[in-house]
Length: 252
Length: 319
Image 1 (cartoon, each protein chain N blue to C red):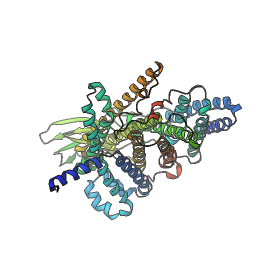
Image 2: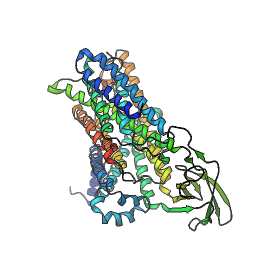
Image 3: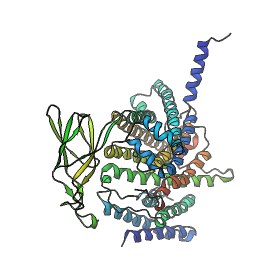
Image 4: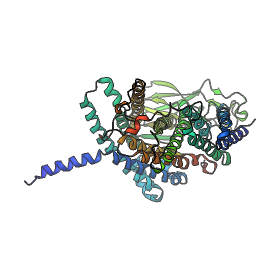
């Protein structure tokens, strides 16, 4: 089975999981499909990696983000979906499907081996990017849930989006730093300007530094912080996922 | 009583110190930087040719030539430099104010060390920025040098010596995963020998992402031919190397390591707090002090918001 077919099957599973999560009666089926999606998504990522190793699979970032998001989300939700977390679960299923749609409709694959990626730091850069994107998206989904629960002055309980935010920031920082170490070893430069995508990494890093400081500074209400965290979702999609799609292929 | 000029200057300095140490200013500057860099993506994406020379010439030369001549494409870079400079000052003042306060609290060595995590990260950012500045201002680059194994040695006057090359134990790709790539060189097995003026010879291996150091200069492999086992192609047989001396690189690499150390301290502190809070919840203590902040001390000295006490979503959950 080709990698593309596997990816399409995974997308169909994510869509199925989302649709079946809408009526409460089919929630168990939805959960089953969601867990199966994680396995198929992991098989897809493994296949891409196996195909290109020891080089790094180019442009895997956005295609591997949905399985990573599903995995983080499943770990967060636990064995069963609590009634209070149903919205988060549905959003998670939808986000997994929606983010996965981009690489399916606008694939950006690079089949020629790029030898300079056969180094530890290149692999670390890619893997931390994927995990960072997934954790930021999870944090955004949790923040959206918090905002919806607090409509009409209701008490939504304690916000839960901070741990995923810190996790995402840690992954993103490690991704940027491993990219810089790779850049130093391969080119001797702190920043390689051959690919414009470098500025999008820095943009998102500063965006989330601002958000972390909002949390830590005190004096900012939880709803404002939740709104900012939720805004991270469209930010990440526009700034860090769109450049990974086919129409944004570099000129070289 | 009329205030003297000295007193006025002190008041202004004190006001400036407080202003530059504001966390709100950090947030604004970070958001402006994020917006500036997001706008930069399409500009850089479609004008790469303007930015690639940044890796070859020093930053002042680039700013006064490519930068000024292409302001429509480089405006964001000038703005980024200004915002980074302001953020650097803000970070230094803000961190110094809070480290002073933290040291005065007398928490003991372990407690203080864990609380220093965020501040270590802040100082690390300054070290990284200084390293970048040093790298872009002071690095010395001799790009585009080629060596042919059967040709004459490559003389490099600036290094006061010459290079020769030889090939031993190249590693080729084997296997069916990438059929078209079978037999291509993963590691061309290139060894460079450098003979200085005194006749001393040092021989080191270079490969992609594996630089070698000769007399304080870093030599990197940029390209090589032949790429396939047994030659092939058009019979090309040479390597391209980049020779570079960069005093800033050690500084920014040290800054990156320092940041990771700060991040580790910060995450350790978060985990410690969570464990302590969970222990106190299990013991039935649900008082307001059971929580603690989401990530360390409140930066502006306020009491941490109470909502942060319950942020345990990653471990709660299954119903």
